[in-house]
Length: 209
Image (cartoon, rainbow, N blue to C red; front, side, top):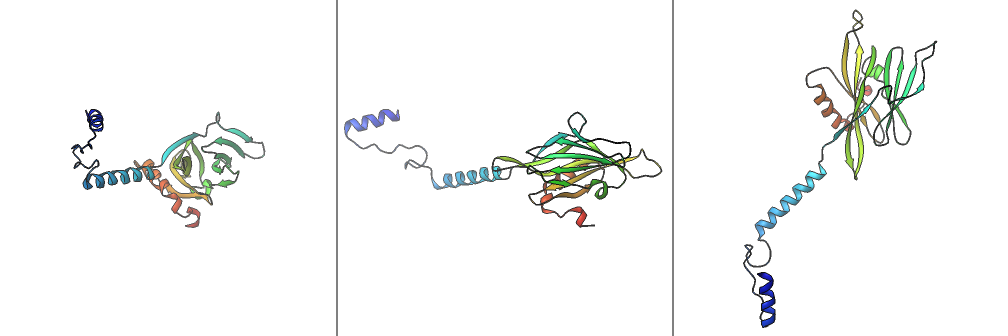
């Protein structure tokens, strides 16, 4: 009907009167609608800007990691290169029945997390996978922290009794290090993710000892 009114008015040489569209007859929304639209727009922008970090898991298993240093008869050193995410890689190392993880940046820099001294000096193994906390920055995935399960034998009277920690390491452009050691508990995973998401603002755990 509106198109017909426009054509009819043009043919009769008369100006088209503004139709009542519920917005006051001026062809646009009233002020209260504009305010609501602005608020909704700002809220949507804030939501996009505040996207939460997400988790990416990568394996530390023998099938996924490539051995770069094998065990020899005179010592038990072992190293393997494992996959990571967003250009990062991991090195799994073992010596004297203790394991450690080093982070390799996309630029090839190696950062040892020193798990075997910072988390526990007992005989130890890492879990079968690691959890990366990743944010989206300029449209690209950017790791900000790493969560590693670290199983340590700390009871000299019971070597098979293990304490399962979660080690949290921050990842920044200048530093990669352990910032938190999460003890076993029913909410350990949630505590570790919460610590990981704020890890970039924390000092290294080794500097707090």
